[in-house]
Image 1 (cartoon, rainbow, N blue to C red):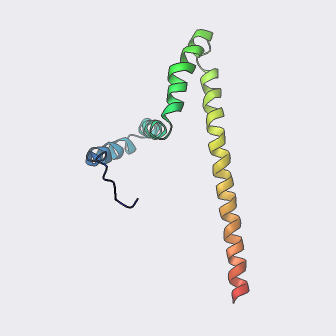
Image 2: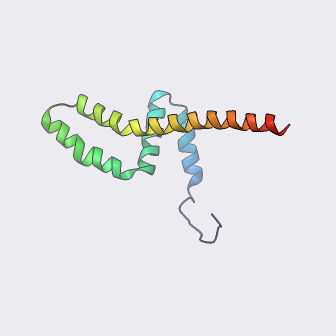
Image 3: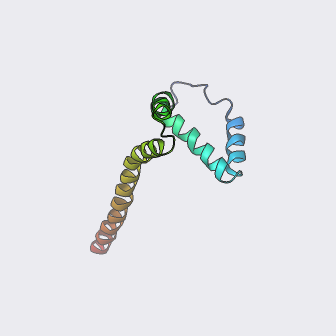
Length: 105
């Protein structure tokens, strides 16, 4: 943040920007791939759990659709709840700031 330590991880950012633009123009499949890359970037442990442990268990159990869908819903539910809390609290914060501005006048 203070630019004290220099990281050279992003030298290929032109390639990454081109990849993002290409995927963004591919419709649903491109959106899915962007989401998958985003998920892997922020939570690689979840990918290891899903692809390395859960998918083999689901295949062995013979339930290829329902179990992965339940896993995806259950891991996405906290994100949905947290985003709802953020939106709700931001709305309430806007209301409070509006009342404070009215009081200040």
